[in-house]
Every structure is written in structure tokens, then in C-alpha cells.
View (cartoon, rainbow, N blue to C red):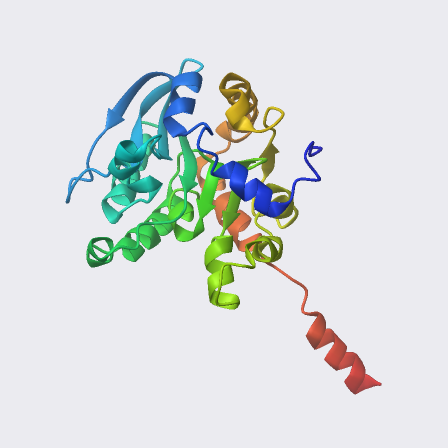
Amino acid sequence: MKDRGQDTSPVDRVKLSRHQDRPYFLDYVSLLFSDFNELHGDRKFADDPAMICGFATFYNEPVIVIGQQKGRNLKTRQQRNFGMTKPEGYRKALRAMRLAEKFNRPILTFVDTPGAYPGVDSEERGVAEAIAHNLREMSRLRAPIIATIIGEGGSGGALGIAVADRVLMQENAYYSVISPENCSTIIWRDREHVSEAANSLRLTAQDLISFRVIDEIVAEPDGGAHTDYAGAAKLLDQAITHTLNEIRGWAAQDRVQKRYERFRAIGSVQDTAAEDWQRTKAG
């Protein structure tokens, strides 16, 4: 698609992805789906309010929807842990995905997190293991999976629900192994180089589609999704509908193989250094 905001800098897109009025997962649930019935708990420890899962209907088709949820004010931000998922959230998501596979329902995930929660309690309960387990199990699920980056796509916290047949991304979202602020702190030891870090990380949808990390850029209303919730939902609806129509007919075995091949292809490069060395040797 043609990007209508080609002059928007990477750091500005990061700011738009975090806009306080940007639509969150539950906003899209109310606009895109009907009959939403939330599932709670991971059946091991607790319910994680930062990860929302449930049954829903999408154009008369039963689906499972999963997404990270932030809060609008201090109270709800604290309740939702600022969208940072703990291990029980990833385990709850996987429980919902297995139900989708059992009942042959498509899985639609929506990513919006600065990253998995790094607190002591989260580490003690195995957040890294929970994410790794999701990566392995999602790669094997026989149900159709579409992941959409709707805001922040922070590192493994995002990837834990984003191993999918197709990955969509709204044009003002970002998807990166690290935030520009943290990258600046690590590389330059201060936060004065956030813009430079954002440029170097290549974290925008426009960059990531060229690397085949994502499959489609979903346009947003002029000014960003926060200016028109209904318009943003309509554009997202169209992208999900045609993508689901594309992958729905795949045989389960073919789907798993294509998913595997899709992720194996990311980051493949030609070893030009070895070729240069061979030419030098021959010359």
C-alpha cells in the first residue's frame, strides 16, 4: 500500500503508537466483534488483566480474540499493569488458543505492549519460559492465526502472541526488540539520542514490510487512529477480512508448514563477505 505519511519520522510514529487517546484492544473488540465472552485465568496461578482473551463472532463466524490492554487513567493503567503481561497472561492466551484449535476457530491476536513485565514476581514465575512456550506452541497450532500490531510491539512481550500465518500492522504502530529510549540509554548511556535510536532500529511498519517481518500495513485515518475510532476499525476490518479469507482454506498441515517457512525466511541474507573473500583469493 502507499503510505500516506511518508514524511512522518520513526520517533513520531512511536509517539503516535503511544498516544493517550489511541484505540486499545477492547475498543476494537466493541467495534469489530459481537458476542464477546471473556475467558479468565491460566488455570495455574491467576488472571492477568493486561491480557484479554475470549470467544467472539466476526461476520457470523466464531473466533477467538486475544489482545493486550492498557488503561485510560492512572487507576486502570495500574490495574492493567500498563499493558505489560506477566507469565500467567501468556499462559491464559495459550489456553484460549488451544480452545480455538479444539473447536476449529480462527485466532485473532492484537499486540499493544511496551514489553513483558520485568518485575521480580514475573521473573520468579517464569515469564521468559512462558513466552518461549507460546512461540513453540503457536508455531504448531493447526488453527488459522492472524496477528495485528495496533500500538506498541515491544520485544518478546509482543512476539509471545504474534507467531501467526499473517502479521498485520497499523501504519503508526511500531515493532521492535527494544524501545528507542532504552536503546539510547544502552548505546549512548543517556536519553538524548532517542530520535537517532528510532531511526537505527528500523521499527516502523514501512521498514518492517520490506524485511518481510510483517505482511501488510493497515492504513489509519488522517492524523492517526486516535482521531477516528470507527474509521480505524473499518480499515482494520477490511484487512482482517481479506487476510482471513486468504488463509482460511489452507489445509492444516500446509498452514503449519507455511507458518514455519514464513518465520524461517525472516532475516535471511546473502553472505557477501564470504563471496568477496573468495573473489580476492581467486584474484
